[in-house]
Amino acid sequence: MTVQTIPRLERNTLQTAFILTRRELRDSLRDWRILTPIFILTLLFPFLMDFTSRWATNWVSQFTDPILVERINPFLLMVVGFFPISFSLIIALESFVGEKERNSIEPILSMPVSDLELYLGKMLSSLLLPVLAAYLGITVFLVMRLSTSPPWIPPLELTVLVFMLTFAEALVMVSGAVVISSQTTSVRAANLLASFIIVPMALLIQLESVVMFYAEYRALWWFVAGLLVVDLILVRMGIRTFNREDILSKELDELSLKSVGRDFLGYFLRPPELAARHGDRQSARFNLLRIYRHDIPLLLREQLLPLGVVLITAVVAAILGAMVAPYFPIPRDAFPLHEISADTFANIEKVRLLLKIDTSYIFFNNLRVMILAGFVSVLTFGSLVLFLTLINMGLVSFLITQVVMLGYNPWLFVIAFILPHGILELPVVFIGMTFALRMGAGLVSPPAGLDVGQGLILTTANFVKILIFLVLPVLLVAAFIEANITPQLVLAVYAGG
Image 1 (cartoon, rainbow, N blue to C red):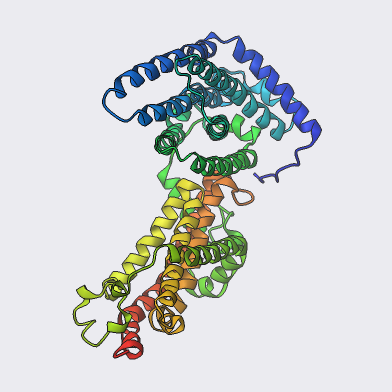
Image 2 (tube, helix red, strand yellow; image 1 turned 120 degrees about the horizontal axis):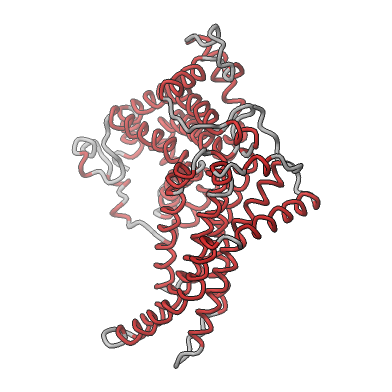
């Protein structure tokens, strides 16, 4: 089924979505199973946190610096806001699959509204009630802390950040849960998959609490920015993958390894332009000459956009590495280019700049990095692939800048240490990162004509094809050069220098 492009958010679209939102909110307000826990967490939980704050203040002040007592209140303020929005996850998980189990999904999906309007209506209805409850709970807690003696008045920046973090976290959980609800066939399956949302959010709360205890509130703006980026990714993913016909046609969540293996093998063996032809056995044949003459060039042309993203990330990393280097100068005796001699490589343990100089060690280390990139890409929608690129290129730029700061010739350093193997290694690493990035991005934007699962299998097959027939052979040659030719060139340039 062809994946439709994202329609423009027009005024009529938003008006229809708000009508659906009001309908869903009325249904939620009639359900005591939703209202009771939200009411408890909104009005009673702030009293519990206030009691905890008073008790902690009296107890901790007897043994430690009073400043630690002041750091408890921002943490409790954040917790008061987080617990009510946790119910947004439950409401969102019920949005589609719950209606399907209650046999009430058909009237909703038969309404004369677009998929976008229906999706936005469900998402907003799942978001508004918990967010309003969280804001009310935060307000109640602030009023109670203002009435204490002495009163606790949080900084304006912290107050704004807590409200923004609460909304951003709620939107992340809702947008992710709505995607899960629209792609599963039972509430049980949706609840199991919800762990992929609640566990990262719990870890994020822990990181935020560390920042609050150190009172580095400005760092929380980065959390807000990161959450908003994730929000955009998940909302776009939900809009692109939502299809009411699929919701009605799915009857059972069944994982068939045989079917997955058959699809993967077909995508791997067929030419890229024929990959979606599941019944075409003629094209699903291994042809090594065709792979090198046709498949790989075509796949590279198809991935020009993600390749551009990876290259831009590499350039940004190089700039950041050069900017950071002056703040962390390396002592001259820890970077002994002037001491390199013929005896240096005879006793490799004393060399501080190089890893173990062995072809197999270097090759398998690079292979692990490429496999890790593909794995984390699926878990993070491709974002950690860019982070790995940022770290690797930033480190190279950092070292080159250190060479300049120590008075060495950077061009000689590049020619001796990087260029011999890097001229082969860096391009294929960028290509491998590109196809790993496409795996994660395929979850947000599946290839045309495929659903999320099929798109993941196709992008994984393309990644494996590029890895086996292009990246690994070149990395093996580069590893041999790095282990056998680069050291000799280093000696030729620096021995006796």
